[in-house]
Length: 297
Image 1 (cartoon, rainbow, N blue to C red):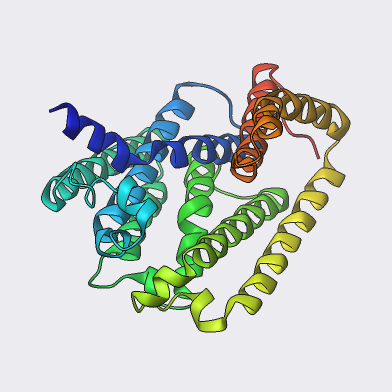
Image 2: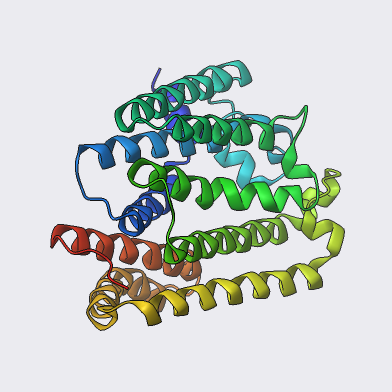
């Protein structure tokens, strides 16, 4: 029984879900002009469960490919025998139903069935992205577009719809920044898995266009994201105050992994650096909301 519980926890890949999902939900809340009330926490719950479903169904469907990669074989509970494929599907579908029900409840609370349809569409994309019968992740260009929407864009959009039916230019730019960052992350993953994916006959964007062009596209997406951040930052009235809070948070959060890296150069500092950036964003957003401030442009 304990082995199964550990398998479910491993299947959830919660370490890859919680920080980015919380950060994007909070960012969307700020741009929509919402507050830290009960509605926010219901939305956060729905988003976390939905994103967990996305990772779960991905591991279930990717078990064949993951079994050929040493690290993924050990991590994926379907590959290492902690869970059977059937058990993985049952748990995944349970999370699917919970998230769909949560989005329906939120839509009822705010009187917006557009929100429910967006949530349902998002969950469908999560499924089709990994489902071997369709596998959007194996279709060049579509793998990028769906990933950009799934891991970032969808969460921002759904959260925003709960608090506002229209988006300001600043919210649209923030949405674009998140899409670009998600696209960058997808290319990072595709380049990391390049050899394994190629052996398995995958046709990701990185494999089709090649490593050099994929890295150029990475730089382009990162550049667009940076331009968006600069545009928003230049428009904020309290930028200096927010920057101080963000940098102070980052210094505190990143200090521990940095010290670990100094003593052990094999330590994965890049992953912790990226994580510290996201957690610092969470800390800053919570501070803004806790002090009852709103983003003023």
